[in-house]
Length: 153
Length: 85
Image: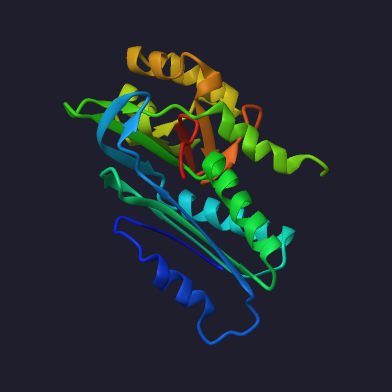
């Protein structure tokens, strides 16, 4: 189980290999990666800058990961989240979940993304083609996605 | 009580600073009290804290609710709803 917050890019294959190397108890690996889009609401974007709260970000990601491990039988997991100025097409976030069987890996990956979107202290500022920046508002839909994991508790 | 206050994203831009160390008045006991106190600190603060429902807070790097007491806090942060992922 590990979380990392970094400016530099990540290599998805290398991250998966780090989790599965020399192990034979993992039967399923799910990866999700989030990528910067080149447009938002019909407006072309030149860059997206992610600000975060060093210290709290790592703590919050670790709490979200621990929550996933308490809900599903995961053999391993990893969250890598980038910050700083990113261009369209660049990676933003990576979630990897590994389990004996696919169901836990799929569900836990979706849970991790839903939870980190509403809990990890990141803020996005999008710059348009002229370089004008605008903060991205939190989406109601993201809050609803995170909320549905609470039903039945 | 002396505490470090930190600001992020548009809250930081509106108050014109990322961090400060302040001596809080004795009557400021909860996050909600702190919001009210912040609104009294000038135009940028009044603007940033105008709508308490769109500014979030964290005490010592963990999410905090409006009614939460701040006694013993070392660091309190203010920020818009998060947009990670």
